[in-house]
Length: 198
Image 1 (cartoon, rainbow, N blue to C red):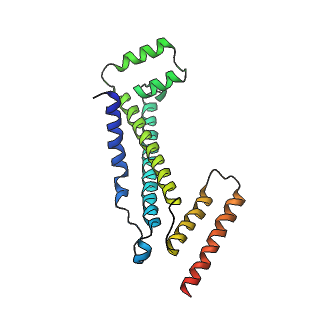
Image 2 (cartoon, rainbow, N blue to C red):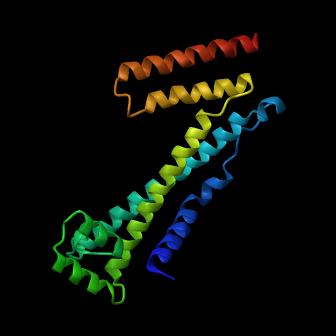
Image 3 (cartoon, rainbow, N blue to C red):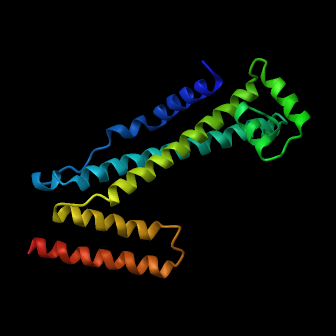
């Protein structure tokens, strides 16, 4: 098996271990049968799972990176001094190494993996898993917001998500706009909910 395939396999295993706890997250209990059949709820559940997986993967990566960097520094080693195949190629592409430095580092990687290299590799693999989880969350959210609801309950669920998105969006930097639009959507939702109960 090639180094690239081994890395991909390890990433898949790490990602699976990180996100496994969210696989059993419930959907929307207590929905009427008609509303439960609305595709927006299935899409919303998938997004919720993807978001939870992203949070778990991101937290796991941050924790491992912090503890690893701390351990390396305590041993008098700078993390940037440790090369793996992945970050060595990145350094080369960015022009951070001369040809001779690259050749020397590559030769050193041909031997048995050191404890410190294994630590650095584990951080990189978890970082890649975190990025993969973020991409999956983005895809799930796009699927969610582009799914057309078929019930009033589904339409309200979509509107709530849009309001929450505006509250937490980092792209729209106008905080006034975020708050006003998000609150306006919630006010409209409240009217529909009062009418449904009347």
